[in-house]
Image (cartoon, rainbow, N blue to C red):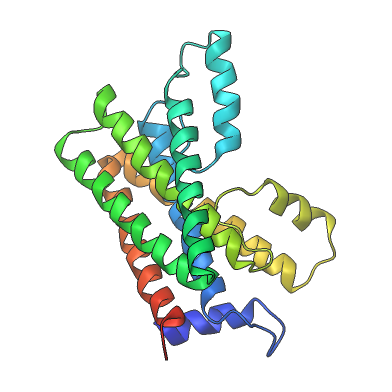
Length: 230
C-alpha cells in the first residue's frame, strides 16, 4: 500500500520534485474523508457542516433571519468545536516543533473521535437533539484538528476541508502539476460526499462514518511510519 501511495504522491509533482513523501496521497484520502463526514452531517444532523465553516456562518445567518429548516444551535456548536480542534492542533504543533509528527498525532486523535461518533450513531441514534449535539461536536472537533494540522504541513495546492480558493486557482492559473493537485482535492471531496450521501440515504450514517474511520486509521498508520524515527 505504501508504495502505491508513494506513486500517487510522486505523480502530483514533476519527476523527482516531490519532497513530501506519501503525504500528498494521504491528504487526498483526507479530502475524501471530509466529503464522507460532511454528507452525514448535512443530511442527518440538521443541515450543518462539520468541515465547511463558511457554510455554517451562512447557515447561522439564515436561522437568525427566521428560516425554519436551519437550526440556531447546530452551526454555532460546529463552529465552536471546530475552533477548539484547530486550537488544540496548534498547541501540539508548537510544542512538538514538528509539523509531520503533529499531523500523525492529530490524525490519530481524529480517528478516536470518529470512532466515538460511530459508537453514538450506532447506540444512541442520530435523530434526537442530544445525540445530534454529540455527533456534531465530535466530528467538528476532529475536522478542526485535521484542518490545522494539514495547514501546518505546507504541502502546496492540496487542501482537505475548503475548496473555494482551490477552485479559483484551478480556473485562473496556468495548467500544470499544481492544477493536477488541486483537481485531485476537488475530485476526492466530491467522490467522498457522493459516497457518503449514497450510504447515508440508503443505510443511515453508520456505514459512511465507518468508511471514514477506516481511512483515518490508514492515514494515521502511514503518517506514523513517515514521521517516526528511522
